[in-house]
Length: 79
Image (cartoon, rainbow, N blue to C red; front, side, top):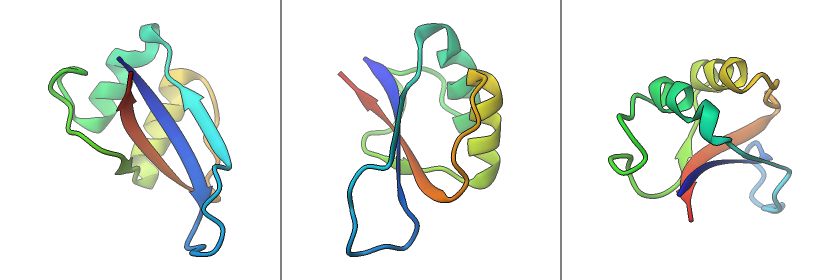
């Protein structure tokens, strides 16, 4: 299992194509889980969760990548 971040245009009901994706590497998982308030991959909620601006900023710092602020970003568990 791994964490996966996806991004879509904000508020665009007509274009639901994926605009951004990031697979979170295992070494970054603890910091990303902490930013979400989740204890572990096994105990994380099902589904895709919309990131708040604060969560996106914390995750971007944790994975050393600037996440696109112009998109709605979601995080979920894959695999």
